[in-house]
Image (cartoon, rainbow, N blue to C red; front, side, top):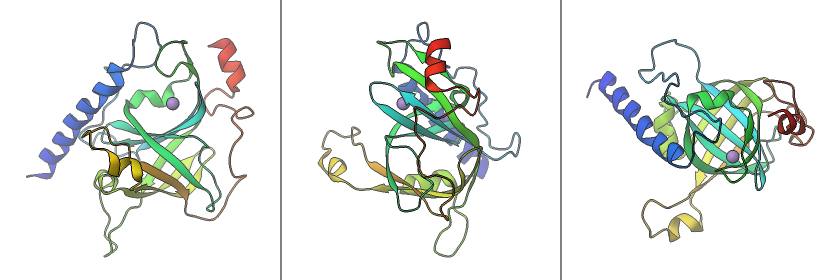
Length: 223
Ligand code: MN
């Protein structure tokens, strides 16, 4: 199979992956993007830019952070209850959630109560990342492939988060117990692997948007 065909297949995979995202939402009621007209850099050669990442604070039924990395035209997503830490000692639980469309990286606002994920969303940090996954022979491994194997390393170039991080899947009880095929929810850990930088974990109530400078409260009031 040529490299180009391989990439095309990945692109199709992205389209399938967004089905779950769309099925969960009513786009007449929420202003979240449907992803229908999202820029989808599926052939991977359009711009040559580094892939993007975004961390959103989501004040839903429980406060959490959503950590998203652009991979093959979609945002691979994890819910991180405590948020990313700049301290390498902190191993942060990261629960995979459905792929989101690329234009979700700009979404900030209020999802109406009663809708999926109802609550306030803030773009807390955004930027690009450089994949740094290597095999034992120190050869670069494609990011999507490393992700499938359950371990990726990357360097974040955000406004707040900067430097090396890793996401690692671990095989917990839930995965072993999952006999219902496809409902398995493996858990990941998000860890800072470089030196500690900054002040550990942000306080969501005091945090300000990288997009608008607003607090959660201001976004909730203004929409
Ligand atoms: Mn969320």
